Image (cartoon, rainbow, N blue to C red):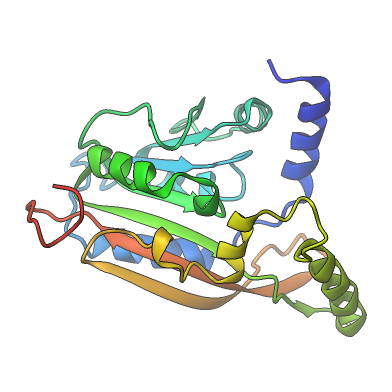
Length: 243
């Protein structure tokens, strides 16, 4: 069981962290549909998706629920998994405590592995090998994050942007002891060679996406970057690094 302190942090994280724009998930699912992977016969859904680094689930995991028979969200944080399970309203969504490099699923069983703002914290080589183990032929890896260049739609947009710029400057400063080297991968928009998906059929997108949450008093547009890659349907030595 998570401590009281970490539970409170996870509650605030769930409450205040912005959700990702739905457009990102439409791009991902369009890529999945284009791969020729098979849906279940019963309801035209894909069998299984895994959301790695799911956090409390509301930001990324639940968006996959309409497209899959089962969605598994995994995270290394016990308090985040507690929050995700507590607030889970989808019968086909489950959350488990797990590292990304050793997923609790069978070989060749997953159609989509999604990683939202978490790829830069992983052991990329081990993670991509694990993806290759669990993905079905034609299965997809989707990893995305966003820049801190956020455009606000508000009468006081200039003032909000000024405060946000100050916060951004402090967060990314070399004087910030919590700004680790891995976070620079997000500032580089996942262009570094070390994080590229090792499949021949891979793409990179940059999208300016707006929020669609009408309940929020502040709408905004973020610059998101997305890596997509497909496991070969027939193993071939020149299609990927893993044979």
